[in-house]
Length: 229
Image (cartoon, rainbow, N blue to C red; front, side, top):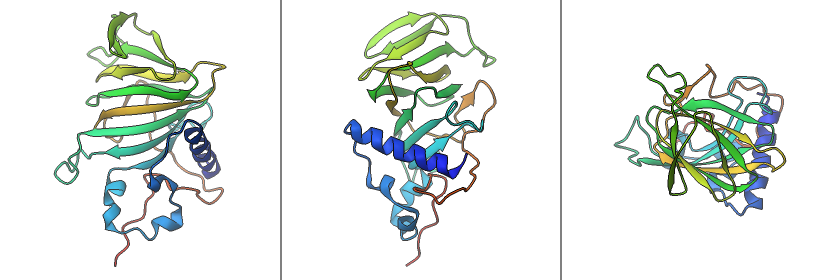
């Protein structure tokens, strides 16, 4: 991805969050220069990858296949004694015409909530033992209601609605055309993006960046080490 694309996506999500009254934590507004002065008291942000996360899944076409995310809070499965939170929270933005590819998580259970904007479609399949799509019906839990839907159903979430995504449940995301960009919440078990994403088609998770302009905000994978006193 080009840095200019990343900067543009971050500014767009800042705008959308403000439009829907979602106040971001202070660290989401820090510049690269601000980060240069941060000491070890902010290691939870560094070590647990809190903050901005923009991805094109390695496709090179962010406007078609991509997601803009913020990890607001998270524990750490690699250091549970130091960071014992068993939960995580994210805020996500999906634009019209964008697609987030089919995947499941081996360990994480999560709720996806439409926080505002347009409507999102989430297609669901159970995973077969060999991790292909299972043709059996899928049990879903949507805003306190349990029901079964055919494999491959696109569950629609309008603003305020949510769905529970359990381990080994394949899911993808796209916006209902004509409804506008969607602001999504994710409330989940501890998040481990490096090891707990099973994409149906092999894809990357964090982008290679072409530095065509200066960074507006640092991504969660780019923080400098703590400043020494």
